[in-house]
Amino acid sequence: MIVVMEPGTSDSNIQRVIKFLERHNFRVVLNQGDYMTVVHAIGNKRLFNPMSLESLEGVKEVKIIQEPYKLASREAHPKDTIVNFDNGVKVGGYERPVVIAGPCSVEAEYQGLLDVAYAVKEMGCQFLRGGAFKPRTSPYDFQGLEEKALIYLARAKEKTGLLIVSEIIDAADMPMFESYIDLIQIGARNMQNFSLLKAVGKSKKPVLLKRGCSASIREFLLAAEYIMCNGNENVILCERGIKSFDQSYTRNVLDLSAVPIIKKYSHLPIIVDPSHATGRRYLIEPMSKAALVSGAHGVMMEVHHDPDNASSDGEQSLSVEQFTDITKRLNKLIGRIDYDNRMTKQELNIK
Image (cartoon, rainbow, N blue to C red; front, top):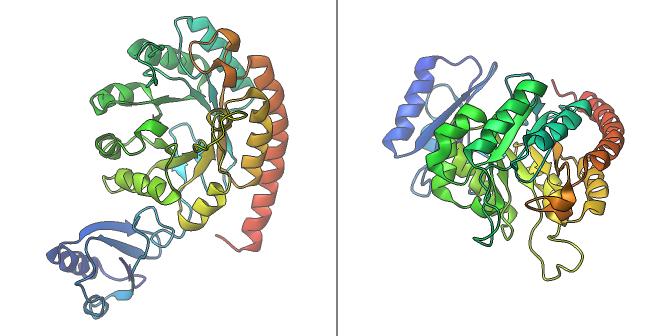
């Protein structure tokens, strides 16, 4: 439920509404803008009469949200969320689409990671990704270098200024990740690891949440809701493909329709990972272009200094040379998309 307050209403009126809701066992999230204040009430509304709220002084309107995800809903937050980073990079809204690139896992050879980082920086990308803790289907596969990998990523950041992305798999590692990482990733396997979602929800670091392999869009947004209702509203969604009956030609099926659907029903930014979605190098460029045209706020690509000898997912990783060629063409497309978005923004009269 959303309570929209009258513009310029007093703080005492707002507090009166909050106390009223709390007496009726609602959890309250306050969103105060420059011109309007919105009170989000999360709880059981079936035995509650909205008319009792509308009669309170300073209340303009009471809206009942039909979707089960309240904070992630565009009904609750009509304007696009823009996730801001310390170095000025912004993700979401009409900001320039971002590119996240790097190896699936950080390996023992630091120079290889650094070669990739320099290429990512040279191509104007904003984020360097790399796995430190790797959840693998087989217990005998490479599991990652753990904190040593995070140290390597931090060194690469020092040399390039790139923001760092890595996946967390255990809530106990939160202090470690908060000291090294700019954008904490929740992988597809952990999309419904609710204790982990609650843990990153208590963090101030932005979170990149990947869609589960068999998750519906509603389940995806409800996973984001877990993070947001624990206090962290800086959530970036990532479409990375869903399982299908035929894996002969692609690893997963890239559901690009999820991009405009999520943009319609949620205010959260969404990017696309064509590397995990397709599992094939030759599909990364066309699917990245399709993702950007569909409205994605960015793409994530796997890049390795020696993909044929990578410890994990080499078959879906680009070489540095392939990445450079593809990104040159993506940058041209991004420039065109930026222009189109600015025009659309003007036409829609969005302030």
